[in-house]
Every structure is written in C-alpha cells, then in structure tokens.
Image 1 (tube, rainbow, N blue to C red):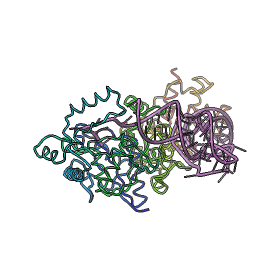
Image 2: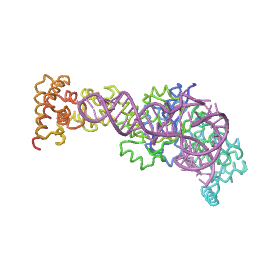
Image 3: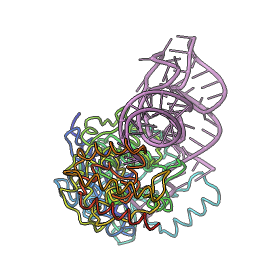
Amino acid sequence: MKPARTRMAPSPTGRFHLGSARTALFDYLLARQTGGQFILRLEDTDRKRFVPGSEEEIVRSLDWLGIAPDESPMRGGKFGPYRQTERRELYHQRANELVQKGCAYPCFCSPERLERSRKEQEARKADRVRYDGLCRALDPDEAARRVASGEKYVIRFKMPQEGATIAHDHLRGDIVTENKYLDDWIIMKSDGLPTYHLAAMVDDHEMEITHVLRGSEWLATFPLHVNIVRAFGWGEPVWAHLSVFLKPSGKGKMSKRESAQALKDGHSIFVDDLKDLGYTPEGALNWIALMGWGVAEDDVMSLDQMIGRFNVDTLTPSPAAINFQRLDYFNGAHIRLLSNADLMTRIKPFFVAAGLPVEDDMLLKIAPLIRERLVTLDDCLAFAGFFFKEDVLPNPTDLIAKGLDAKQSAEIARKCIGILSALPDLSHQSVEAPMRAYVESSGLGANQIFGVLRVAVTGQKVSPPLFESMEIIGREKSLRRLRNAIEILEHL
RNA sequence: GCCCCCAUCGUCUAGUGGCCUAGGACGAAGCCCUCUCAAGGCUUAAACGGGGAUUCGAAUUCCCCUGGGGGCACCA
C-alpha cells in the first residue's frame, strides 16, 4: 500500500472526546502502517464558537495517547499553515475560482430574508427547507458589480439540480442522493472565512490527503463535498465515515448529564480526564480501537500490534455503545503487561498526590505485589497506601477473627509477635514455614490467623499477599502495628 | 415532516450462499487455585429484529416493515 496521508481536523470548540480520539487513532494507524504521515489541522473558521484552551487539550490528549501527529500547527510541516484562519487567502482564491467556473455564485440575501424564506417553506410544509435560489438566477456580471461595490455577500455552491450524486464511501459503498434534495450550501461566509465544506476540501487537496476518516455526521453533506472536489477537477481521497458512539444503554448519544455521571463513576468520554482517573494510554487506546473495528481474536493489543493488524476495510459502519467495563478490563490487562520499573513510575504520582512519602526502591518492591490487583492506576492507593504510613488505624471489629472473640484474636496477635520476634529476618521465605506450623498446631483456620495478622499489619481486610507485605514493611513496624492491634482489642 | 446511514448474545464484534449445532472478547453465573482481594485455569447461560422473495440451500443476496442513529445553520 502506498504511503497514506491522513488527517484529523477538529474544531477548537470543545472537549476532546472518544470520537475524535478514535478517528485520530485510525488515522495514525493507517499512516504508520503505510509509512505515511498523520496530520493535525485545526478547523477554527468559526470564531464565535472558539473555546480557549481547547487546542491545547487536543494536543495534550494526542500526546498522552502516544499518537502525536507528524504535522500540526505546533510542529509545523511543509504543507502548513495547519490552522485554517491562517489560510484564508487560499480559500478566497479557490472560491473565486469556482465562481469563475460557474460552479458557485455570490449571494446577497440577508440572514433576515433567509429566515423569512425558511419560515414560509415550513409553513407550507415543504419536503425540504432550503435556499430558494434568488441569487443563483442573478446575472454573473451584475453580481460581480455588486461585489465590487462592497455589498455584503456569501458564496454559495451551485448544486446540480437534476440527476443524482453518487458518492463512494469505503465502508458503505456508493451512496446515491438525488440532487433535488440537495441545497446550494454556503461555502464562503460574509466574514470572509470559508465554511467547513470549502475549507476542508481545499485543505485535503492541498495537503495531499489520501484517506479521509471522519464522523458519520458528515454523511448528510457528503454529496456536497464530492461535488466541490469534482468541480475543481481534483482526485478524490478514500472516504470512510466512522459511526457515532452511543451511550452505554445504546439509546442515543452521550448527553452532558450522562458525561457528568460517568465522571462521578470514575469514567469519562474525554481523553484528558482519563489520566487522572488512573487509566493508561495503552488501555484507553485498546478500548477505543475495538469500538468500530472488528478483530476476530486476541483482543489485547499494543499500539505496535494495532499498526500491524489495522485494516481500513474492516471498520464497521454501525453505531457502537460505549462500554466502560471494557475500558476497565483493557486497562487492567495492560497494567499487568508493565514491567516493575514502568509500573513504578506510573503509580508514583498517585502516592505523591496523596501526600505519601514514597521512595522509588520501596515502590519497586511493591509493584509486583499489586500489579494484578489494579484495575486503574489510582487503585494503588487503596492497595498499598499502608506501606507509607507510620501507623495504621484498623477498624476494631475487623481485627476480630471470624468465629472468635476479641480476646482470642488478641491472643493470636500475641502469638504472632512471638513467632516473628524469634525469626532471624522477616523475609517471606522465613516467615512462611513457622506461621504455617502455628496454624497447624492452633487448630484454627489459616483464614482466621492470617486475617488477624493482615488487618493488624496493613490496617485493611483486603491487601497484597501478607508475608511479602511484611517483608517490605519490616520487622520493627510490623511488630509495632501488632502491638497496637492488641491494645485496640483489649479495650473493646 | 423530508433526506441519508445502520441492524448477529446485555455490550464490542467474527461471519461475504453450504465449513454455523453461529466463533471470540467484556460483563454475568459456577467450579478450581488460594492467607484476603485479584490474577489465572475450566465450565455454563446468552444472538442472526419481523415478513416476503431468490436459491437445492441464506446470518450471509433483493424488497418491504420495524427499530436505532445522523442531517436538514453565514457550526463544524
């Protein structure tokens, strides 16, 4: 396959969400696989909806995911500039070219007249509300004179009114639309900036884009786009319209309210939130990739494996419901693939953020103990926070072994102190045998004895393996926590 | 309302006319392992939306219906 040039063209008008991330991923995969380039182009022609900070969020999200573009407004590239507001002269020329060719025309209708026309069409229940064509009928010379005189105008694309437009989508095949249902859409606004329809087509051509992957919300104006490209006489890229993401129930798109709820539940549809929620880029990427891309087996994949296996032909056109349980699964699966050193550097920030005095070598020893227990990285606090505290505060009732009372439990703790004190060291190898022997001789269950020990030493009912944990905590601290536990039990 | 798109287990999907008694993964249930919780292993339940047509034969092709989604801006 020839090197593909792909592009993601978000508008800086809001948060960077799953849909954009998936488009970017597929763009990236295709570019890498073919030895091509992945481009980020900012479609900032709508100055009214511009949201400060959104450009930064796009770049930050892409960086974090590990799928940074090869060419972008920040990084530059030989097809720049990559911000549409910096390319207005180009659009101006191209729009005029279409007018000259008779494929587009200036329109002087005021927003008020347009509004009136719309209302009138709605009132008589017209099949489709659209531009009534007043300025389409204008004499070109007359129109040119009015433009030259400084009258306010927009430029509309002259849609063919007969026949049908056949647009080819790579995933759906030919999409046939009768031209009578199409409109003379505005391609140049009165503020001198182009609309998406013109700008994207011009840029995709100028930037030599070979594959356009975009959301299915563009399907409705797809016929317009191919008509514009054809009016210029350009070759068409491969078009693939990706399906939308539905909310977990599968009924409709995620709403603001549901996005907020997801965040409360520890999930998010915004990539920039994922890091703080304890997700890894690997897990997030894997999750995103498998929504709308059918892979027969071996679901857990690294980015490199995805590059190797990606295929535009196997993208699915049907909408996909978001499933956060799968995100958790993929995240845990990728965490388990991490080396101790890697895992260590990833969990460290969460301890630091919690104000715990962490040390690298100790974290390195803890990493293998909690690796397969983590669903999200921030789970490390719940599993291993006790390692870094001077003292733990076990829930008194948790200290009482199942089926026994406080006194008997205190006795177990005392016995443990005796055993552990007598040992040359507290390595888990040294501890295991004598503790097992104690369980044997006591007539109690391992659950009961280890339970008391666990809660006393870690302060919690659920913890990493006990003996390994004590080895890291050390004898002094372990014994002190045991004595505290006895204290608590005796005062019950 | 009009136009366009989509349709396999609860969810993501494999499947391109006979290899389908419909495969995998998440989730669910059970068992094993086990110092807790996980991880891991094994097992189970779970789907071709409905109706026609083509064909010796249809999840796979065609039509209709239904359901879902998107669009109908001087927004992208």
